[in-house]
Picture 1 (cartoon, helix red, strand yellow):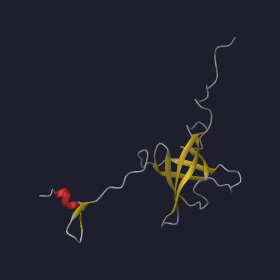
Picture 2: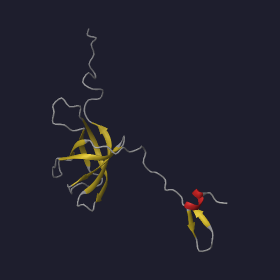
Picture 3: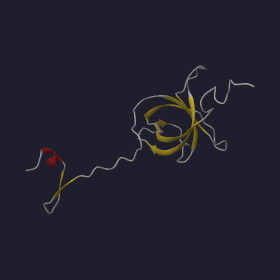
Picture 4: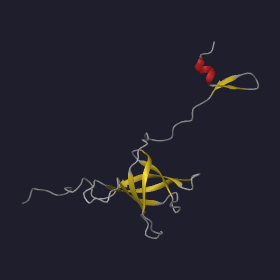
Length: 137
C-alpha cells in the first residue's frame, strides 16, 4: 500500500503506471538571503553611457545579488562598480566591488530584474595598514 507522500507525488499515465516527479537540481553554489541592503551601481566601462543607480537588494548570496531597476541599459556580461552597503556618510563601512551582470529579466511591473556576480573587492587588500611595517632600520 502506498504512503500518503507517494500518493501526492504520483503522476497519472495513460498506461496505468505511476512514477514520482523528479526534483530539479539546485544550480546555485550558495544559499540566498532575502534582505534589503542599499547599493550604488555604476558601469565600469568608460566607453558606456554613464549612470548612477541606487537600489535595494532583493536577494543576496556570498557571490551574487539580485535587484530590480528601471535602468534599461544593463546587459549580460556588463561589468559594474558596486558600492555596498551604500551610504552618503563619510564614515560608513561601505565596500566597493567589481561585478558582472549574469541575468536581466523584463518584469511585468515595467522594471528589470538584474542579477550580478561579484568578481572581486576593490581597494587595498587587508585594509589601511596593509604593507606598512613598524620595523625601521
